[in-house]
Image (cartoon, rainbow, N blue to C red):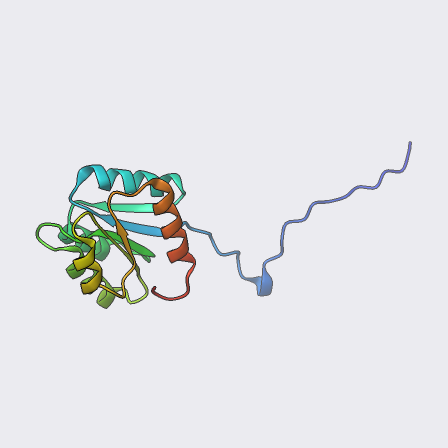
Length: 146
């Protein structure tokens, strides 16, 4: 018999006896009354590994947020929607979830929209998947609300 050195692979030891924290994907709330855009954004975000809540308007998005037990990291919302528009939705969400990050989108006149919501991240429609992906990654990586 020959002597062999056995190397064991050890798993990390939790510090101070606490169990390791579960890693959960960021949660994104998508609100858009245009079915094509809502499906596109939802599919893109799910393909990137995010957990996605999808709503057909601001009112439905607000209800989903209120029923969702955990954090919501980002809302991606169209500005012009029936019942409750994107700006009103964001106003409610900021009060109820102060840490939520926002991304507004619209195909309407971007000059008027950006002047009224100058401090909010904005993505003009139409956009491609790379633009959406890059904007979401930047927003989620940024400290605090952009």
